[in-house]
Image (tube, rainbow, N blue to C red):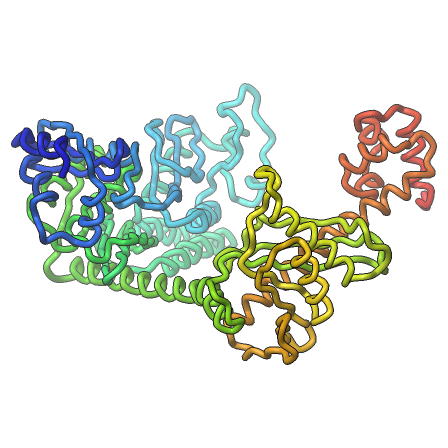
Length: 609
């Protein structure tokens, strides 16, 4: 412990506030405390710390504090500081999703119903949040079928009556733009919509059933059938949302599951007594941390930009944490918000359901990570054993040649790092010294150029050396490639892959290696070979199309080399030029009216009309 830390620890006050742990001036952790003196000192004098805390304290060389008047003020300050500094050792939700809402702007004379990505303080009425745009669109589609609301963006009321659109003709709009309904009639409809969005499905269904029966009593069976279809649409939406309680509950249910490495938080959203969605949030490295602190930190970050429900159900937490949390959530909601730790009954079952979902999500995440590891780093480790390499092949480069009967020969270099494509490192080569379809000599040229860069003494030209090189081809291709590398003064492990039997060839070994089809090492080198093949063919096709396009333009009067280049750069292909109008051709830099006319006529000389 340095002198700065000792002096600051001795002067800590008995006050609530926030503390900022630092390493070389950078904030690495932000926390809050009821008593800063006791809390901050515990990091440096206590021994019973989790691995994460021990790692954090080992880096701390300084800290700052901010005093607060209350626990609530400290909590708000902590949230703001975490958002501002994003410290490494704090829980940081990597969740950039903004859960959508259904929005009704009641300030409009004839309000519309639409989707909003954020809840704003704009006087509009918001319903939600919903898990994903699909859920909102599902609700909006049902609304359009059941309630004849306007969907247009006309600034009503209009000075002159507007002709009703098709929605009015099919019963999907009351047509306030055409004066087909009064404001009072439309407002009554909006109130029914708001009841519906608030979860009162049964009340809306009862109203519709009364309307249907009244129409049937008047022998208006077709209109009654339309109302019946609306009832079925609402019931269909209800069936797609899992019923949880008979009460019109608005609840967020939050639970946590930890293993020895990571943690997973789960949130279930219940609106109108129905589960409308849920989401899980991975908390890497929090598997061994204090459960109450992890859950508390997650909740404060989760609701930082979200509006909490009327009731938030959570797992068991200390009384003082619940008290601070409840006060903070009420402030975030701007109204009543109750934090409940249920002990039995339906609410307890909901918390257990959320916990079960958290556990399932964490297990699935771990399984996905294991599969990803096996496909990437694990495959590299397997390949190291197969090829008997002295070191782990972190950077693997794959090479392939592509040409059409010896014309426009090109080569590709693709790069995989730790078993994953590093696409910014990919390179194309135009074959310069080889005439005709000679893949062996072309491979020799490409490898010479690549390793000349690797051995260059100029830091601006020098390329990083690969750990392993894959050549798409058999022993001959491999021999030419290796000769080129050795001539440049480099010596990197290299092997070839022949496509017919997926045989692996090594430079100093006569017999090929055949791997099991399920071996992750084989899957990795197949991905590298296929990616090199795709990258080479794509570049070759682009060059071929460009060259063919240029040749078609050479005989057109007024289209010289500069204009050909400008046309190809602008349209990318002759096909696009043929689809363009004469005016669009003229708009290309360097073109004049005569050249544009000649080009247009030449491109359309074979048209029947």
